[in-house]
Image (cartoon, rainbow, N blue to C red; front, top):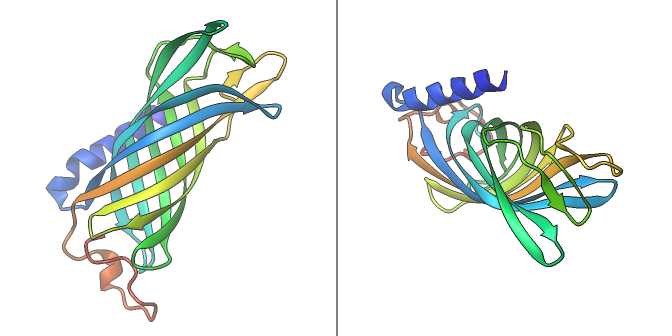
Length: 209
């Protein structure tokens, strides 16, 4: 299912310029870990790179279809004060709903599907060890500030919905992540749906976004 959703979004993004649909790029810095029994396991730092298509639903609501690549670097503890690292590369596909409280500020929530592309490896940490699952579903919450018609910068929190790693005596752990995400709109369709609709609420989504 995840492969089908990811491929569908990829096809949509590739064909967006040809049909005049709005599209843009995403780039972010991530920090994450896994949590079980009130303890944190497997801290990681990484990047998020991808693309998105915005769909203007009303004057204040925009849906964004997103897909991309997540790169997470895990610190693995071999022995006391001796560390090595491992990298997990994953494909991601998601749908994010945004509500613009003003012309510049928005809040968002959405769901992200994740498919690991790297070979499985054992993550070791002071609290335990385990093999991270390759697939996951993440519930996302965030906010963003638009500096101009094309550029936005925001914060995003992700909470895994299914067990991502078995830590042994502490039970299953779920992923969580914090991301600083930048969005840049490369192309905008001339007359977005939100602009054409009549509404007493002041237009919150500017013509180019």
